[in-house]
Image (tube, rainbow over all chains, first blue to last red; front, side, top):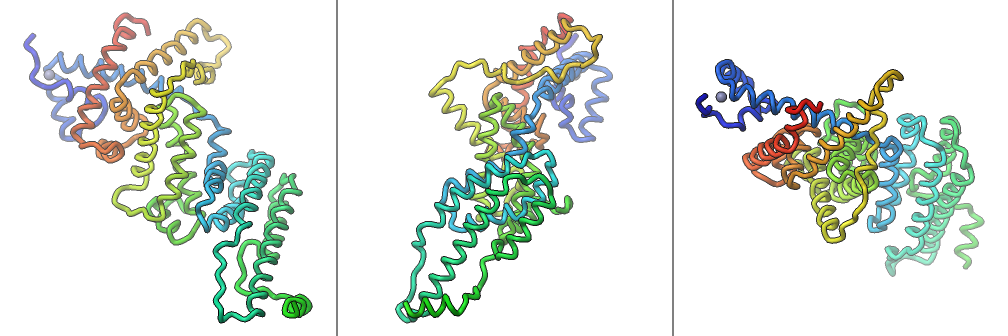
Length: 208
Length: 193
Ligand SMILES: [Zn+2]
């Protein structure tokens, strides 16, 4: 039998379905009269069936797959380099409801663990307020107001995190809803432009 | 979220400050990236760690991402580079563990109570032999083979992912197939399967 001039590569491409429709049709015509190429195509097709079967046996672990998002955010929070990260982590928790919908089976504990991690990291993110720069023109009143607002917001945030942690039995979506509503009520989701500080506090602050 | 929103649109939304968009991208790609990594490193824990690393890197780089290529190709590129790093580190600090044993195959075989346990064992063994053969390929051959065959990437996308010319991808793919054929043809020619 004379050696076929077609390359083995064409048999591979044909078996791998990498040829265009026109190329495949033309090669099929060739196959009708070339036992050498026909044999090669059969061999590579068998090979691919075998490797497909073997590789499909590789199963993804559900638990690990389920926790990917959470672990990515933990990893991000751990770097502490992203200044706006806290708000993003917060945003993620705001969306946690949809997470529940995807994975009904996601145990409440997983979320609580993530919450604890987030809380710890958040605590770290909160501590140094190095970015704070006040201009000379700002009055002492305004300054105090600013400090107060920051402090109040910080306490609100802390309170919310603690609240989440204490309620470690997030078993139902309705519970989750309630916590979210409470969070919104305390402006946990949004950093407010202005914060109504009671007159008493104001007076106390300015008289300081 | 609307499935019709394409990845690149989600990236734009993320860049505009919409956090959910990144969650959606992770949801879309975590299985794909994980399975690619699992086939590349054949170890669950490492595959999981690298998957997290891929999205971590993506998150941090996405702010400045320009839509020169598909988002998915870019993501695979991050993963492929991490696989290279992983194998490099492994070569420096080889771990002689029976990692292949970690791949559970039990749930793949027929659950029919009348099925032949000897046959099941043979099938498991066959799967293991085949995966070992795939692992014997050169890193480039294996990467090309897996990305094209199991991740469904077009040759052009494989080329972008691995930073090669498309022609080079094809050469690696042909070599991979010929090598696998040499290693495995006895399996079917001697009617062992
Ligand atoms: Zn021929």
